[in-house]
Image 1 (cartoon, one colour):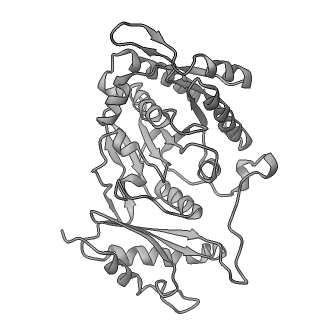
Image 2 (image 1 turned 30 degrees about the horizontal axis):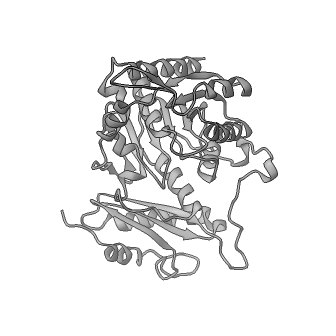
Image 3 (image 1 turned 30 degrees about the vertical axis):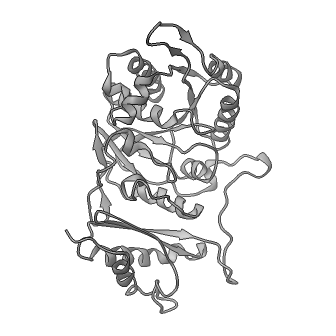
Length: 365
């Protein structure tokens, strides 16, 4: 299959005309962020946010023009609002709470319709490095082992890790008429920006473009029948978290933290953010809770112990369980077979299964 080039994409897009100005969207300087990977092309159309609704036909025409190129399997265009200097420009949208004020889910009208998806939960952390993505992957697998049909959506645009965790980083989603089929691994339906851009290529996108990409990746995927979708959130409490909360009907959030004070401080912020946007808190998980020496069997609490349980009690949230720090969890993740699949009868897998059982019960209620 011939490989399409950026120049060919731009040439195709040069034929897409904005009906108001009569100019090509390329001549208008609207095209940015072109990514080409094994026949899958994604790009942004950067516009004044006030024009977004009127330019949906232009977005669709751009996708069709690129999809018609020889060698293109799928084409995905995102309307990305940027702050324009023109007199009619609307300010870039910001849904961040001012001075700590509450921001309800109703602030961003129009929830995404995810047909067939019964429940959606977010797995989040206040800071990076606490094992949130590894936890999300193993929870998705554990929920699947409990008999649920599970999907995993990787919402970390800047640092997607789900493809590598599941050993499918070389896979590409297929699709017809710009509807993508999720990648299937270990029985889990998955979607991530990591499937569409080279693994070592940084995603250098403005915030609004990230928001548009997230919404489109959720909306334009044929998820089919799913009992629970697990969204692996990026760390922190920024635009991505707020957009997901306000555009997706979340049935709950799970907070992942290590026992150390600095991580728990950020975990509190993450938990309080979900409460501000009226998302139920399913509970807190203490990851890297302790370490058992593989040679002598001695238990060491490297990052402290019990901090997440105490924080959950203090904040009126449920404590879902402890996951140890162990080499096998890291090795199995690096090898693309998370511990719940690699050692299903081992103590670490049982820890995730116990937590998943609690989450399943909460969703059932």
